[in-house]
Image (tube, rainbow, N blue to C red; front, side, top):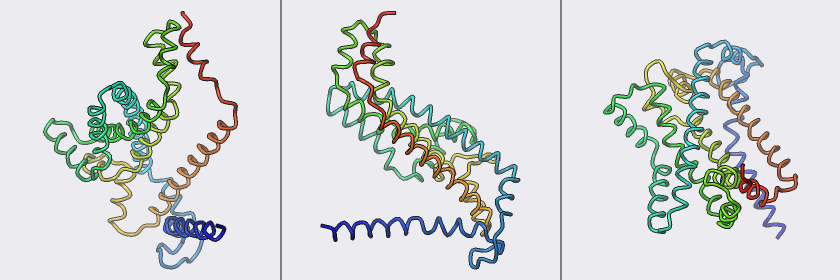
Length: 276
């Protein structure tokens, strides 16, 4: 048994080494004064200063964050309504059909989705730019958020809503004080998943972005095509470190919340039934 665990741990180490080695290689040469990724000649922070002084890049960074936040919020709100609608459907065949349509959007190649949006926006007359990118990111963020929220709805006991109604809660109170608090972890998971996909997306954004408007993924791709520049390494390193900090912070908050005593389920039910 110990040998199996040892081999399993060794396998995990090798997998993570393969995954993180290119990232560490990229980060290492972002400090290279030689200007290439073939030989490390000396330590420098010039490429990080170049990134910090690039006003166009800062504008693109702001564009990316604005698109990611707005699209994630909108996609999560729509996904909550969609998950509630799917959950309330009694016909198993109809529910499976809707879930299949939802999952098709996730597994479909990004190139096909991007090309479809490009054709749609061209026919409708939507100008390619902020609006087209935002609508596209909302569209592919919705099915991801639905998959995060729906399992929490399925796990929720129907007696919670019944008890709240028996205590005199209105439909609005049942939704805001019983259902939403119960599915809150799924809502946050759906939001952060949609946010991650939006920040990371390239293929769909490449199709629907217009002249003069860009996001980080498209900008990095454009710069990489012009030749190897260590400013790309510096930018990628900063993005990776920020992402790592967010993941570590989320992990710490989750651990602290798990150590706290759980809140009784009856509390939101009782609160929802209190007449105002």
